[in-house]
Length: 180
Image (tube, rainbow, N blue to C red):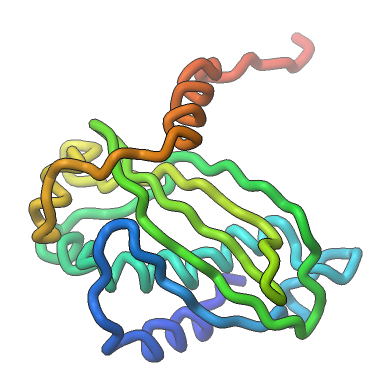
């Protein structure tokens, strides 16, 4: 089930947080609850992606993106994600989610999120997101203007550019491997 109560708590806790500039991190604090676990009694990999919402939505609010979405009747969607898992997060373990917007290209916004426990990174995700309107994807410079920020993106890190290039070479739609 989606963590609606946890999201409400995050939005309440950060309701008066200072606005954030592009590239500045939003940090939130959490606990790994029993319903977040898999069969090995550690944070489930799919649940990790859901819990990242607890950092991404307050980040969007603090940057002014939520206001721009509401004002323009736009939506927000995830268009791709790449995750690296490196350390286990166990039941009742406290962790932080670090979230930051990196920049954009002609179609997508790029966000980085990571989960930290005891000073170590447990996992990291790179998100490709899109703002959508009645006519499809809204150009990120228009979104930036609606947020009141410079429509010129900060330079994306080289590793993000490399991911964009590699992902662009991936065939779509994928081959259908069913026997016919």
